[in-house]
Amino acid sequence: MRQFQREIGFEDSPLALLYDRYAPIILMYIARYISSREDADDLLLDVFVAALENQVWLTWSEGEQLAWLRRIAYNKAIDYYRRNARHPSVALEQIIVTHFSDDERSPEQVALRNEAHAVLRAHLSNLSGLQQEIVRLRFGHGLRTKEIAQRLNKSDEVIRVTLSRALNLLRKLYRRQEGV
Image (cartoon, rainbow, N blue to C red; front, side, top):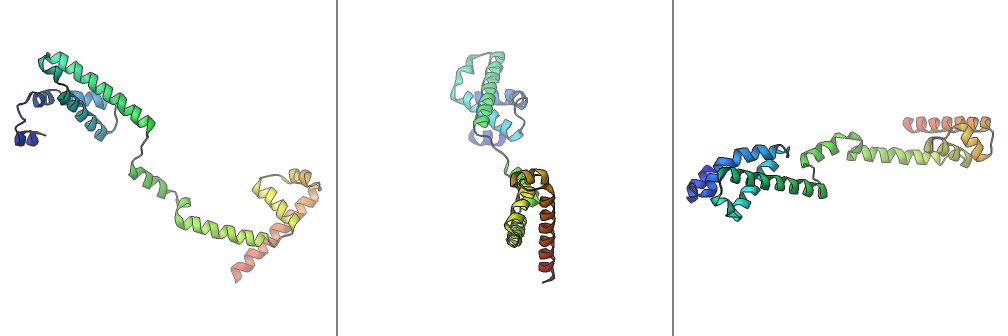
């Protein structure tokens, strides 16, 4: 900022003096409300842009200037929170880390899972209708054999035997596939 002020002859302007005097104080004030250093720096600049646009502070005492700048900083912080509440943002780095750290969601894992599901559906189609229904109710809906028996109007023993035979047939089909 100092280099820029020298280049454009802004070094001794009232705004430059105001900035030099109060920028560290206002930045610490903003940092109490805003955790991101970049956002706090942006709000600090917004405060001094407001001071540039409305130069009522020129005739005020140092205490009045500081109080006015703090009020502007407070209002800018409130605007910042309102804006973020309406339009929340997440850092791109955080999205990348979160998204790709979950191996289950990686494209390769999704493709493998889809392939495994297709194989399972093909093997399930080799079961009888009753076996398919029992497997679906047991593993798809998480029902116990007694609950399945009540739904299908069968005895618990019939459901257990049918489920066991269905699972044995599925194991046999998977082993046969692995051997091929």
